[in-house]
Length: 254
Image 1: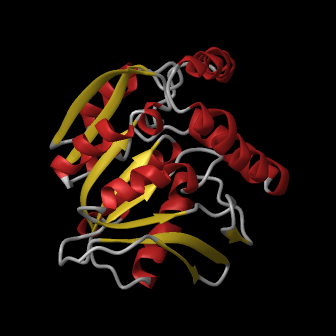
Image 2: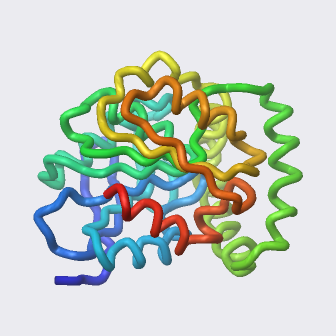
Image 3: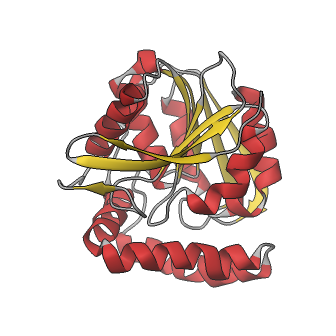
């Protein structure tokens, strides 16, 4: 049975999480999609609707982004991961397939290490977690990559939808945007990678300038039971621009 994605919220005490939930009603574990840095689940709307045709879907807005709020600071991946695990427990969900894109991938890694019995499978998509360059070098590459993507499809998404969410977060939650940026650029998760037990798909653009392919290759070497799949589609936001291909690849694992 299919259902539309519905906006909901859950109160976790110090934090209130807004999320989208829906898709097919089945006995299988739902897909939990964790969005990237400084945006929310909203730019993934088309992806979520495609995934919802065959899966049960949960897509929270991380605290400090969009409408989700938290009265305490979340300055590391561990804090984000513990909060999302509390979120899953609050929904009485025993197991999930976790898909983490960009910043969301680092959070997904920590979740899988903290509670391996709750994570049925893991998908890391162009995720940080291993610093390879200085912050300045990464930001310079990002400055090149962002305008270069304007030659790709879905200009409304690039010029309107993503900037709109980003500006909202920057205006109303500037500290969280900046703190999470430095987290994604500096945090080193290599010590927890060998703890991951769930089957893991590492999905990457061969031409990601923000988080280069070398990080995916190191993830693949350090995560047991992992498989690296690369795509020729360009740039860090390829998931949002070539969503049909992304959904097709992910659906084979989950």
